[in-house]
Length: 378
Image (tube, rainbow, N blue to C red):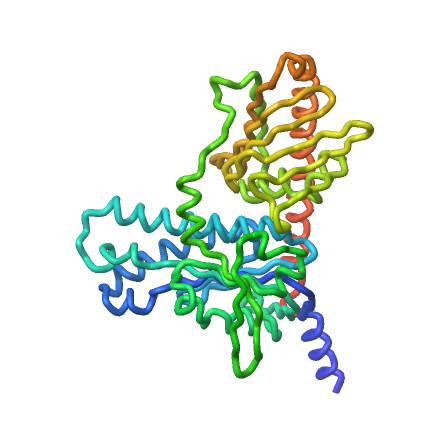
């Protein structure tokens, strides 16, 4: 009896309940591709692009498992940022398309696996809800009704209704959880129905169009030759993580110490987003001029000390961290007076951000060591 009670207690201790964000990336056309291609070469190509998907999602979400031609990732809702999640989905899609186009351009192989790789596409499910996490010898297993709903949505009618093969299904539950305005974001309302879970209201994000728009969109950058100043700082995290700390208001509060109010289109940061940064008695108005997630963003900052345009670029370094370069120029003669003060402020902020991330890395390492020291099943 006592042994049975201890076993139940161990099992309960291994469970973790919470609310989370779920993202599934699924390769469209996988079955037909494998059937009509040499198996070994086809699996090599799929493994290549699946790795690309995992790399893009893994810095923003926790990779839970590979499910054949799909990748399942999640994050606790309390620590998630809707803009970062949707940015990760789009950048994952862009990287996927670029990788397939690179395979097509870089190979002279005429086998069906290489020839037909460009016909593959990628669809996503983005959902939010409750889950139960069970940790055991085979890793972490997520269960619960909302986890089931997310997986059911992989079998949807979007391709038939909209003629798309590259898209994201964003559930109304996700939009409501983060206060998004789907209409303002250009998402189309749709409903999927399943015998076991009923009607699921969703919104459709056309990733094929977003990819085309991204390739055509005008770039706004402060080039090196035009910069009045350049600052550089290494951060001990990959670019997607650095991006979130540089752009999300709750993350910026940790290292800038200022209250930030955003005016977003539909609840998501993008080109055109306005922010008001209140630091003491100084109000700084920020307007995003160009927004290329995980690569760079350009903003115009206006305050009583003038107006400045800044491009903040992120680049992988060889140690798995990020090199951040801020290039700036002043607009108008009056702004030149405040430039030196702006440079000092930016340099101090970037150093504080490095310290915050260093402390975060040390805390994560300590948690991992503590988890590793726990007896299996305890």
